[in-house]
Length: 122
Image 1 (tube, helix red, strand yellow):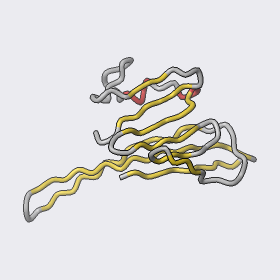
Image 2: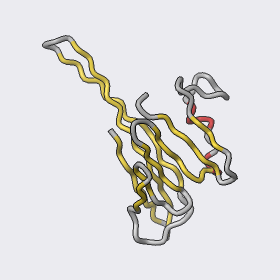
Image 3: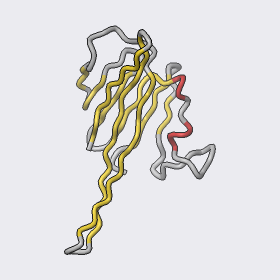
Image 4: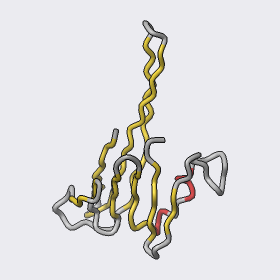
């Protein structure tokens, strides 16, 4: 995979995705299954570049440069992370290509409304 995730928990513990993306708890699942969602401080994707979402204040980072995608004071952020796989087949050349798009960010509920901010990484 182009990027592996890293989770820093609120108590300082770190969890790194293994290159096989296999859960230690259930080998039929991905390593994402092992994340303790309620304890996450930051979630990062690390590869040629680094991308981070902070679930304490909602800011994002790209290669260490911090920015926000919200002006309102939100709290109680919950992680959003998934990969989109695209397979393209070129009939003329009988070639198959595979592209992965990573999406990471947060969601929260304020005044009964769901708010989300998601960064897409190709």
